[in-house]
Length: 165
Image (cartoon, rainbow, N blue to C red):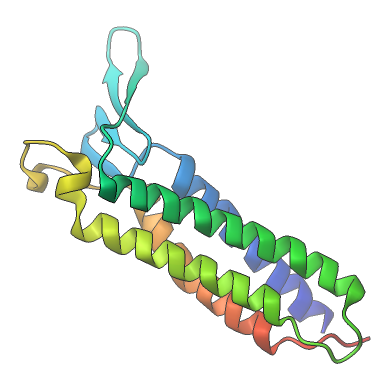
């Protein structure tokens, strides 16, 4: 039981960290090695000063949807973790962690929706006249997709987890 609890806690912390990185880092779409776009900024690498110059992205309804869903995903996963820690001490013996699992599953579904929207509406989100075949998805987008099954699996595991002495 202790091994399962520790494993599930580590999975949750890992997933939450990956979700935060995917939401806050600067690589959802890469045009070239010197130009990247994320949910918040468009960045260019200045070779003279060796720094990144960033400007806020132009807002679109699709981009705001992805931003909101990713933030909701982080919030649901954080709430889920805090509720899990509280339930460890409050739930009676034999109790289930339904609310924790439900919050974690909602985090997975909101992350899934954000990734789908970005996948299918990247032309409108990037709001660029360039050919999209010249760019590629960045590592943050891949991390966001990786979080979807991890969040859903941990949500299901929480639902089936019973508290034992």
